[in-house]
Length: 305
Image (cartoon, rainbow, N blue to C red; front, side):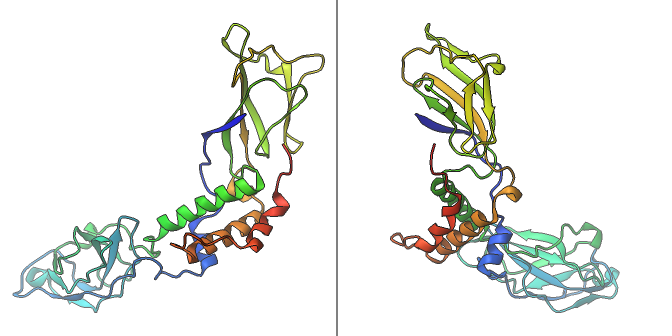
């Protein structure tokens, strides 16, 4: 008997935002957002495209994992007549740590308060930039959340979900599996990884060694109300005759509570505590999950199949 996943969960029971809240992580988690750059009208004066009015700037750090939120806001620089001096020098642009691969500049429109994308500095060494972009050429809004640590959190969420599924012997988010057996059972199938949602097909090698689907599907009944779910021949129907070989029968089924919202809060809490423990003990190979966290999963364990 063996289980092989066909379609893994499309989402996870927890979001990064939920984990951040549980861990009480603020925007300083991950790469710390930059300090403010220095801004001034270009000297000597030169006509340019920066709109007349007051402007401020912010910088973000970009890593292979994500982007910080906007850093400290710069002082105001005011363009009074862009036909005389419509360019701004941005200097003392902060440098990031070893993980920073580039930086992004964001600027307000004249008199505005929202920070919009201005330019990317595709290195971690350049400290100056000449801004000659009109307000109409600015792009998307500056991030408000630091995502540079999201890959770590996503990895921990996945590990916590896999651990939860192992301990409870359940599928959480909707997923598809192939369950391979050497023969049809004498009685009902008890399908693993509840909650059973549906059976896609049952295939077997017949006595001639030909892979055959058990049809019509009315020849068997699927009980999704029991836990574990069950498959049994219909009334006065017997199982097909399968060749006596290893892995003679394959049941493809869909299991799980459904979407993340359907996963019981008790399992989610246990997963949050698992993530918290793993986050705090990163790099500690010998750390063992406390029994108290394991106990949170116990009410949801499937005791037999």
